[in-house]
Length: 218
Image (cartoon, rainbow, N blue to C red; front, side, top):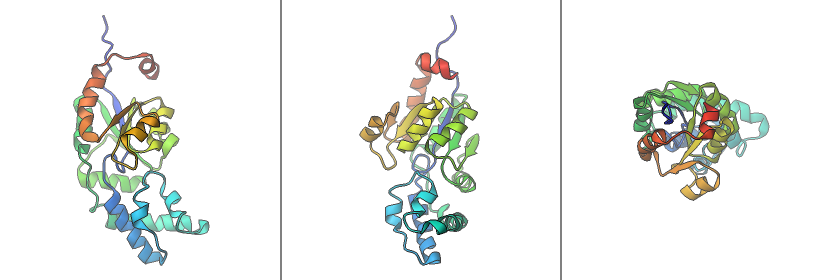
């Protein structure tokens, strides 16, 4: 009789507040941006609402006609101000390693500007199989489907929506702006306190028999 357990999965991970604590680096970058532009950005407030695209945050502080140019300036300042200041979150390296140990592929799908996302991962020594940037919420489903991801791990309600749009199992970690109950209420299939719980969850997930939804995704 053929095994009904899941094969080695492709797992997608969000970046900000899922794999990395980007608050210190982003705070430093907004502080430098304020100094360069002469426009006050409340960096303390901005880092409480990470997840959506940069332009959405900048629209709170700059007139519409300046947002695109300011986003370009922010991204140019980012490597020198944000990368070294940003640590990995607890369990991030182990979570990626667990996917590899299971024979699967680990990809990063993020709303962050892709070159800067890659700089973070290189600096921290985290080596996913692919990094896809500039995708937010349901847009993430495009990359998740392209890479055949059956699981997507993120901290934001937009990540749950992206997983759902891709037909992937949504794993939410309560390391970002939302708590466990909020993530459950938003429809996450699994909620973890942080990524230190992910390897054990992945082992149990792989041992569970595939259901109809899994077969439909395969």
